[in-house]
Length: 186
Image (tube, rainbow, N blue to C red; front, side, top):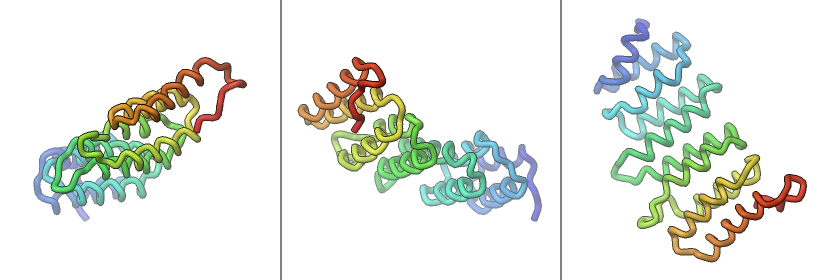
């Protein structure tokens, strides 16, 4: 197998429209054990790749370089959040935010970023699925206040004032108590 130079891989990832050429460059990068997430971001943003092709590369990369898996999943989620397809990619974005949170459950970013996926007009991803993910996150994060506030905002967008008020109160109550007297997060 011919090993491409780093510059050639970078150029192929960013501008090639030939899947086979991109795949060969990807294999070359893996063979050389290049674990630079910045390089693979070029690949994920390549406009010629389909969602399935991007997923193929991302999943393989996460397996090969487990230390990059969290960042890879976050990037895949962000790619799917902003790309359009015949199917709505917000659900796919949420799936990758969930994978990222599984890698680092106490990290707040996947939960907050997942909130940005919600489209209240289309209810995509379904609000209850999104909220279940966020509630699971509450079990792991150190400071739930930002997540409570986002949950309140999402319920407000959905027109559920009772749940909106509930999470606003939780945010206020959590911040008002010293750590030893704080109410449970769920």
